[in-house]
Length: 122
Image 1 (cartoon, rainbow, N blue to C red):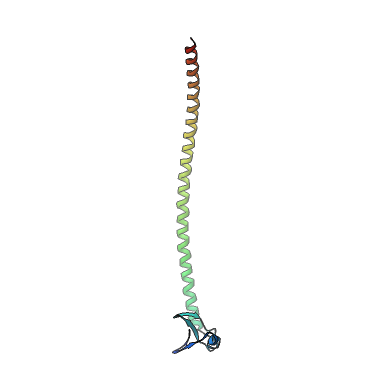
Image 2 (image 1 turned 135 degrees about the vertical axis):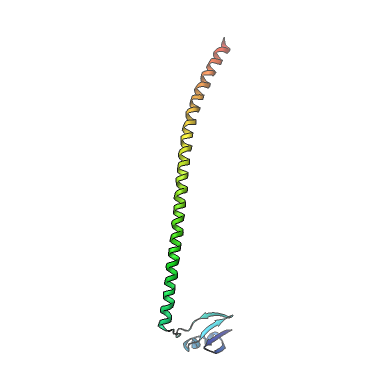
């Protein structure tokens, strides 16, 4: 069941009557919720301008707030990236040193293995 409301008039209507009531300036409600505004509804331009100005202020504030938040996030990510780059460079350097040490140790192990083999043959 639909309800048509206009000013202080309220009518229970069927779906077939909806179009006629909309044309007469009634808003249509269903289950207590606004379903459709009458296209004939008019508001004063001053009221429209006031609401539009408020909306633009809210949008501007939201954009400023969002931009500040996004700028902070970019700064935080840039700092984190710099720290990760530094850590990566340190790890690369340590890896290079360990690789060189490993090569040196491998040479020493080979040398010792040859000495052991030679000592075992004697």
